[in-house]
Length: 394
Image (cartoon, rainbow, N blue to C red; front, side, top):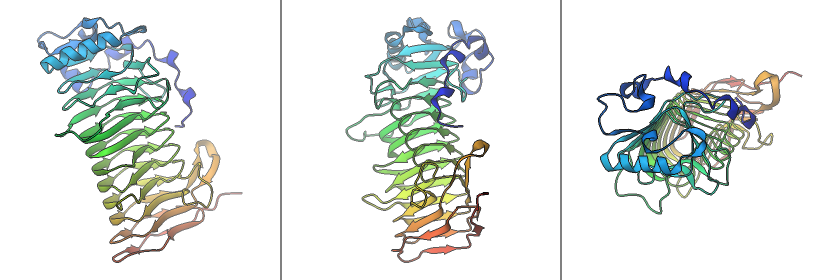
């Protein structure tokens, strides 16, 4: 896919109620039957609320902000859940209380949101779903549409001056977060969370921006964003990043500055604007990373040829990193269009106690497969990385 915003055509997905009736799956199917769109199913208990009970219309015309806030407050008072029947709910910022769930029907796709859609209508809001005080909360099956309103408006976010006294332990499941003028998911000083089976795409910032630690980021699409696919530029640690597809982001597909304790395993990184995977120096070096079994393809789309930004993997001033068993391939845009990239395969410098081994770089880069920038410390092993340069056809 590309980052072309024209792929989002609102007229194509405003009327999907009948389709969504057949899309009950996963956690939603355990709660909801075919009659769920009129109210909670029999026996569901007083904790399952519907947005319509509090006056929400979901017709794509009515401002549902006040009704949705009432529903969330009521759910917070009883530790309950709010169900959003399929529709388009126009809303400003919504603060999710602790111990609650906001649940919809996931029917979104690459062309845009469908099913249970929350569409931002306030260009001055800091974001749409605020998880700052949402300890133990769940978001499931929602499509968030930012319409590129405002400047720096995030889709799902936390905002704190300092870390909280306990784990956040919130879950973001099966959600699409698209077309926000800020980040898709912006977690600032978050502690213990999971993001699974989601799509953060076509946002003007990062797909997922993290300042914090103890995260499980599994089986997501982070695609076509104006910043990085995933970025952690402030203090960050202890992240499992597995089985994600990260592609066509304007900057790095994966960027960590001075992080610690990452498992980066079995991901597909495609057509980054700059570096596919970048570990960079911060106040402390990146340390204790396993980078294993990933496919890194066509990085450096927007980077200047011959610059360090035109590389598949950059390891800069890191310690305790194992970069083993990855596959790297150069290329250009789909359909045989665009520039060939990247210039370099793996660029490394200033390492200590690191292993770069058994990576396959068949057609892995255009100029150099392995580039040593110098300054290596003790215990650095670079060996058994077979491959060849790619020669674009005339």
